Image (cartoon, rainbow, N blue to C red; front, side, top):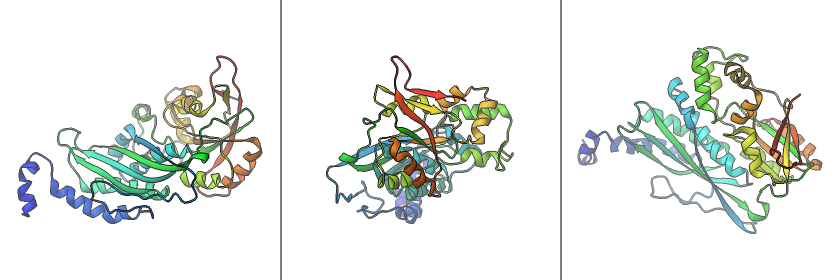
Length: 353
């Protein structure tokens, strides 16, 4: 037994294995380093991560920060014993949020808490976090692994994440200039992303579908369809912004269309969304039918196939669609327009065929 193990013997007997935690950190070092970008000025294991941003060419650099979790989608990871995708979800939820204001993600911090550290599971989770960071050109600068005996059920854990990005103040996307005649461009989601999972789990239980069953309308298993990670929109959106002006952006998360779109609209405007202008993924048809839900209910809870929305002027819309269509990492659709808001009217109108 090492001297460190002897000194921490009492703590280990209480359920916290310091040695196992240290070994875990050692095993993930190379994985974490694979996310490092030129701004990283420290190694992992310090009390704080150091990052020196490149502000060359910026008039007034501004930091944009976001925090989020994965919610009860984690229950699916436990159920399916699949832990390599929820880390992507974790990164996606925060980097997509800071992207809304035009910020390029700089670095990410993660928090992993569990009752007993199972290194194999934890490594799978971190592998997903690293993959999400690579997809968004964002460094995993640090984090926390907390072993908390008696606090979580056996085999379960919780996650939270924190992203910091940067934007030049004159290029900040606020939505303040959105006006009638502007066009809504929707970017396709990969599924339900990380929202609505309490309802999805309830519907799944009622349906009787099993993990290995083929999901209706697809050739993939139930587990594969439901665990599909949240789409990260950072690279296509930042590339588009280099060419065309974007007036507003929306990350379609909890609250769906009705709650998220108004967050970036001026009070005197509304979004008119043409339902059916994008293809509906099988998961949403299934949720609607199995859950006995209306499409307005669905659009209040889920992204329904559109995970991110861009608002640009009418003259730029076709060019934006052409640029996005030329990429192989995103599907884009013209889904509506901005109109003048009538007195006392809602700021989102879904136009059904």
